[in-house]
Image (cartoon, rainbow, N blue to C red; front, side, top):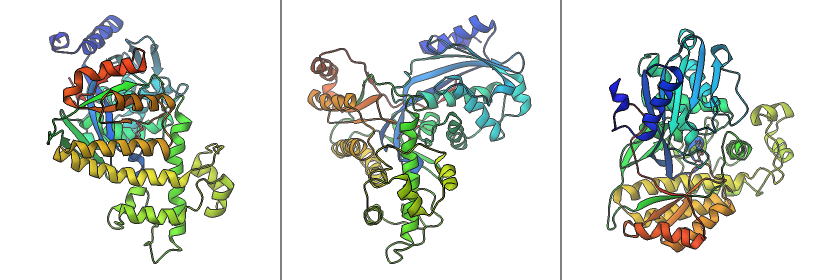
Length: 453
Ligand code: GLA
């Protein structure tokens, strides 16, 4: 009990415990920390089965929790923008409006129930939960997935469930987040659970594998990783939902077209009936090179964008198949941009492999080139940048960063800057001076993943 008051606990950790006591009048049974993440490189590759290279950061959510007083979940948050919520156990699947914070709780608990880790008896016991945090939301640091992880660990912990290995747990929670409507991949939940101090985590998908790679000094010392906040808030489950989901859909449509047209190129491509993701093309048993896939894609995609009627014709689909496949996604006015998306995804997957080698070798000049190339591709091919981010990229270069890129889903949020260790002092001041205004800047320190404290 005393440990919860320990001064070694961070301020938000102690805040969550105090909030729990003052709200529920008893002691919490568990205290969970779940960190945010910064993605060094590998944007929008995860759901395509290609690797990513993120790291967990110090900024985290803290959840103090106990079994409830009956079949009801009571949630309170120290941040007033997230109002208290009470959810009856039988109303868990009745999700609130998009972007509401209780949806992450519902997703976590329903995901654990679907996977057989929480039973009807557990749910009937309810929970009391208090959240405090120093992880900002809507800035591209994966605050939402960290919350799902924190809630899941809290539920498993207070209901004394058998421990779940972090790899399957990450897979369950990535799937569970689809409950909130986003069609994202598994990067955020995996790095939140498996992050390691002073390491980035190279993550492969389908099957999920995580390899910690230390930040090594080479001919240059390890640079500082600085984040600047564009001030553009995008919740991928709220205002950003359609813009985010359009990309995974375009990638899946592109794969359908690629598979179909590959059948008429037997001299260049093997049968591709079994592939489920773009990454399957470069893994055994198919194991094409990235270059071969990109060349085949250039031959296959004869237009920069496709209308719905183009795709119905190419794929031989009727309206019903289309509605099932796209979940009735509205047709974008500028069409489905299949080839640019595929180019980004395949080239970005290759860059992640090169970046993992550069990190291992402490080759920071190569890392800087890859980070800059990743940003250009996110901006031009995947179209997930915005003017505010571009301004920060340009200012970063003038203020002494060796490379900068957007990090996370895009459309707003934070920019990551690689800053030489000896330029630490001047970078922040120079950014603010050049922008002529105050700016939220913070350092991203590779930290340990989620834990039951
Ligand atoms: C969000 C998603 C991730 C990933 C990134 C983009 O953070 O949750 O799965 O797709 O966007 O790299």
